[in-house]
Length: 425
Length: 146
Image (tube, rainbow over all chains, first blue to last red; front, top):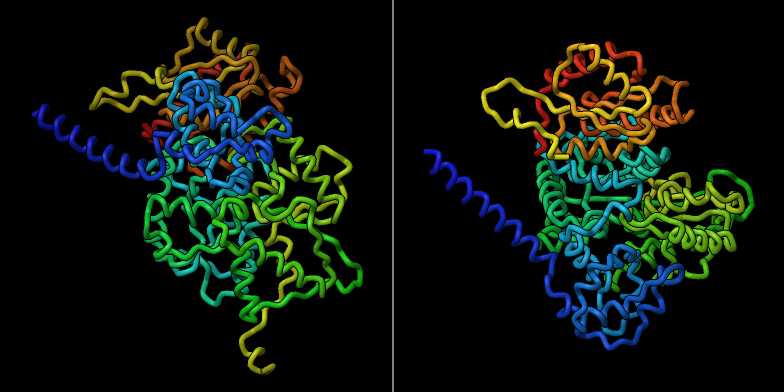
């Protein structure tokens, strides 16, 4: 009897392993050399590499070493944990070699080796990736607090439009003001939508950090599956998010795993959402305080919304169109020295490597911002966190206010009622 | 950490025997636990003690990692406020874990974690705390994360 049970169990385990491997094959390529063959060593990647400005790191040399058969040496040397994954190299590569993707795959290989000490490079002692890992457990029930929701907003558990909050409530442990991003984003969406917006109480992580930073693909696949089942249960057709990383993950990385993800769910970033409504004539901008002072402000492009999207994306231009329009109400938009696809990185990605070197990068970025404006807008909650953290340490930056896109716009937006537009016409 | 898990758990049809991880600070709580042993106060054999130099050394990620590796409850003990060997270590621990309780609440794990102050002379108190906490975990049932 026992024997039969054991055979059944091993069959089941094999089936599960097969399913997992079929997903893993879609996001993992064991042969690195085949991805790199096109490289002809122009070394542009090493020239533009952002981390190479503060420490020794040369992508072109790493590529050549892998091509010449020293892959094991590269993996043993642990040098690839230092990559920022800002994707500047892909922007300038004439052969479109996706170095960040190769680092991601190599990191998976590195993690499988016992000698690698991953904990050395994870920021905050690895607590945030651990939280994401706990979320796939069946016995853990997530219960998010809903006390940040403004009183006049109608929310429900079932519906078409989901506001995907992301990990903001989990950051509250160390970053006190992260809820204000969620609050102001929800305020904007609530004003524009007639139907109640869905806020999920048991929402889980999208898996971005585990996919890029710690290369825990097993957990990422589980998270993706669980996310889709949660969305389907709530009957969601469109997802709005204020997080650049969630947007990129839903838009591109989930598509690699599940081909029909974008058919089932329409993913929009809050910038796209406001831009569309503005073009439809449902939104106007007004200045709440009636003074004539012109406030100069600038915009920091997060890598996930500029370099990490396909080249035909419009978000970079859309956000600038909105900002240029704001000149009529007394906000003067100015570009930093490095902008759009060439913008500097905030220095930390997926909770990897927060140290004095990445601080130097952040310092540079804030110096550029200080030169052009008093407000610095960004649309990635993590960029905002990292830059704010550095701002605390240096008094010279006390003049700059670092805000999220929705935090900045929530007071400036004026909603036009449908009846009003008819009268005007 | 998975080595710590006792074999009793795997035996079927037996009463639930929780696995509790206990961080003790070197100067007070570890001596307190020692005193409890020397003076033969009875307490359940559910805890596994990890000695740290100060309760301020314990990072919240240790606790999440313990839960992930199959521990049912975590207890952190340190010197009383004001008695810290390193002057302020336990105050840091208190502030940190007060904030961390909210995060644990998101995972519904807040009842499985506790922060207590035990001094070197409080052997009896140590035994009482462990007994009480074990009963609490027994009521909650196994976590079953592995």
